[in-house]
Length: 402
Image 1 (cartoon, rainbow, N blue to C red):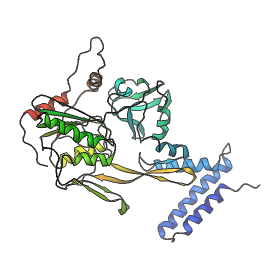
Image 2: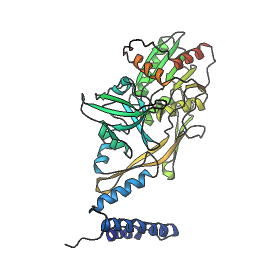
Image 3: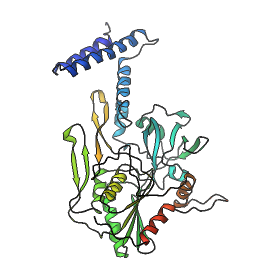
């Protein structure tokens, strides 16, 4: 059977597609530019040193097309598309880290407290340049998932570039089943309550409600919310938590995209369940997405003081769209906007009070929090950000109305 040229196959496809469209100036221009694509593909098919399947070329072109938009948009081949139904974006069950593509480099958003990566001292902002000795340049997020995931008890070595370090750092991490306590809390001195949110899961809003109820019984009248290294999670859960600190039906978040159907507004409940205590919110580079929304809402309504270091800057909406042939497209379709109208995307939340910590002290503090014994000669470090938050609440700063 005579093989049909991929050029004519593609041109036929485009003619069918554009047959349903009126040939406006924009459409005609796009059709002319598509000719460049089909001509290039035809030349490759005819002259490349080895024969290449048309599907491989088309998949490659579509991958490049999506990648040219932003770090979060991605064309997914059938096996990759299936992964999205199994794995939440950027979360690896075996290691306990969330990652994103930042500046075209695989980058750690945050390690989850109590997980293998956390215990090894992986930090927010670490650039993963190799996985088991193989370079990660050009890898998509889901391709990274496949390399990092594995059975419990097996190990993977990641090589990272860390700002301030002369040499690359190798971390050999044993995979484990990740179980995350989304909320932890305790009473501190001077009636100050401490609430740590590790990630926004389905249970987080109920867990926060339960924690605050218990803390009220313990006579708490001031609150520290720790969102450091919280990479985000479920939007609806985040908004439910926001409503526990901001009432009166106030605007919490807007979603806006080119398609007006994407535009939405989310508001708080009419009443607050809990007392309006003075609040300090702790954030750092590992605070992303949902944790940025919560801290941004509290900051916009002057409900509390934001303290620590600048957050990650993830404030866009990705929609997964099924395509033919079992493929899929993960496409950025909108952005989040805080009550003041500002976007956090690629900007982040700037604290009201900046409190820096060295990377070395961050690692030591992570080890201490996880109960790992210090190395010989090492001294325990203080949580300077937490101490500053406690001092701020002890000064008797009046409650900020919400």
